[in-house]
Length: 105
Length: 405
Image 1 (cartoon, rainbow over the protein chains, first blue to last red):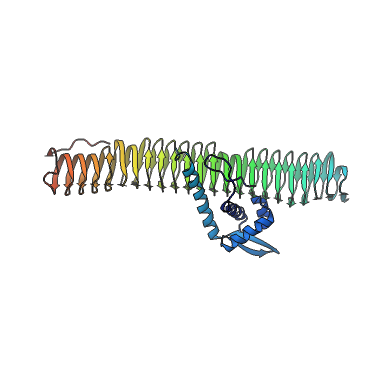
Image 2 (tube, each protein chain N blue to C red):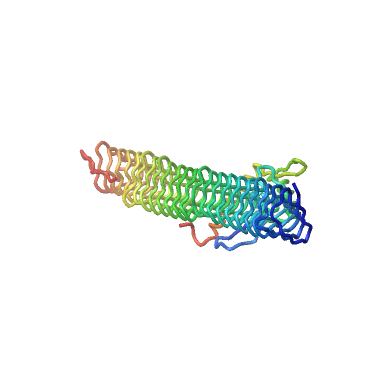
């Protein structure tokens, strides 16, 4: 469901691990701490089995938190996860700027 | 009350159902005029409804439901692991669909919560819209709040709040409170906003006006920009003019027109203003270029200054080895060691060790060791550490020439 990341020329590039992590966190963030794995799966456009591995890694890194709610595991972005997102988007903008033909006019 | 059951794989013609309608998978329902169900419609698998469908509520499970007409649901539309496609208009209350909702016509409801994607071919009106993945709205969008995890492609908007995780492209409109975008925002028509907070890049192709603007990476505005506080982590470019309360840029800021700021302008790198710059305070870590600069309080520049008409402030500090082209005018002007200026007009002008100026017109002039000036006119005092500091004439006068600006 997400557009692929793009380089400075606007061409789509392959999603890297950090892109996938940012995608998952941005989708989970919209559910305000009550994101279920299926909803993240549909939002991020990733199959659930692959998503589970990434979610486990994000939890281990402290970027995503989880808790039990009404018999389901729900996920939410941690403060550290939000810090990652801020850095990720800022770096994406710089990378696009630096790899472009010239600075913005 | 007579509930109706449609077995799997069947093709039926239905008109009015006074009760619930339970539909198994791979069913095609043809409307007898229209399908009107007083109770709940439940789809347990893929189904197609040829014609308009009206019901009190609709529940789909592991289903792909296609309505080849309009859909009107009095209460809730619930699609568990399902996709709902409506060729005509949709009218409902609470919509909760896991995969996707695609509506060809006008879409009206109170609350939309979609896990995957939402596509509307026409107007969308709601109280709140939350989409995990992608949203596309081809007509005007009016809502209190739109939240999108991934990307949004919108026409004109009339919103209170807009929150997008990835990229958003919108024609323009008004967002009365906040716009919060993780990645990139691109607009193609004028935009009004309460505040604009972008993690990555903002590219506004038309004029924009609003409150605080905070962009982590890059900011580009093709038209004029009206703001309260403008903060840019990386580079900023405004083709038109900028008007606001304060500006803080980590890297470089360039304007085609003028920049008028009520309070401070703080630039880590270079500031290039095509026309006039006016503010209360100015700090530039790199070089400053402008047609004319008028600052009511202090100026502190380290990298270089180039103006056509001059730089005027109450107090001006030019950093070590900084080259100034264009006149400086201030109540107090300090050139730090090895700085190099042309004409300086001031109350008190002090040149530190090795600093140089072409001409100084001031009440008091102080030249440190190794400082030099070609010509000086002063009304009160000239203090020079070295006798040869004044290379040409050093003249005490009753009145100084008129200052520029």
